[in-house]
Image (cartoon, rainbow, N blue to C red; front, side):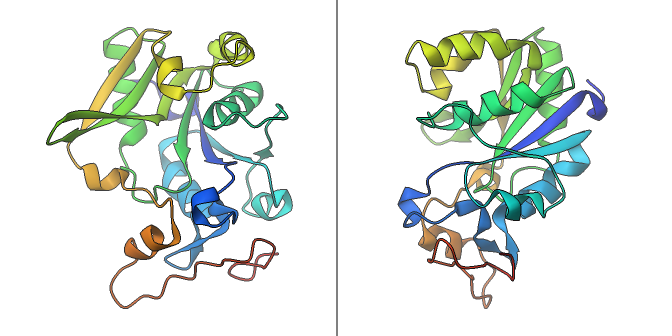
Amino acid sequence: MRPAEHITGLVLAGGRGSRMGGVDKGLQSHLGVPLALHAIRRLSPQVGTVMVSANRHLDTYASFGVPVWPDAMEDHPGPLAGFLAGLEHCRTPYLVTVPCDTPNFPTDLVARLAQGLMAHGAQMAIAATRESEGVQVQAVFCLMASSLKDRLIEFIQSGQRKVELWTTQHRCATVVFDDKAAFTNANTAQELQQLQPPGLLAAVDRADVRPVDGLA
């Protein structure tokens, strides 16, 4: 297993939030805390350092106390643009990515991905869940060698956008997690509300420029 200090964590918060009405998803409230900050706190004990990939409200994300990097590519080609932003600023041998909208991801996520990567002599490892119809890949939960940066640039420049296709280009270990609920994400305001404990009103802010939890 790679020591945690060899791994940089990246919270992906650069999406357009189109299914949540166009709001900045990472700043929507989960348990009274912005989703991105919740992810930072959950990921931090698992890695040596944490960064955020975001394209809006950069000062607000920076107030969470971690470096914030926007996409370098103008057309914002989805999660792979976040991967690339992370790889461009990663100073450790490995980078691990998690989306901001999946607040209950496993607290042993990174350790298990690292075990899978090392056991298979792989360049990357991705999470998967066990579903009734089989194994479902959760490819945005990805541990990768930082040396893959140039190959990712070439992949994106070729017009490709799918994370799942990117992972097939390399020696990739798939690590299956039995608790599929840990990977439940919130793509919509309703889904975010469903992740709140009973009796707790989810503060899902629908105004993109309005402060959330006092954060400007």
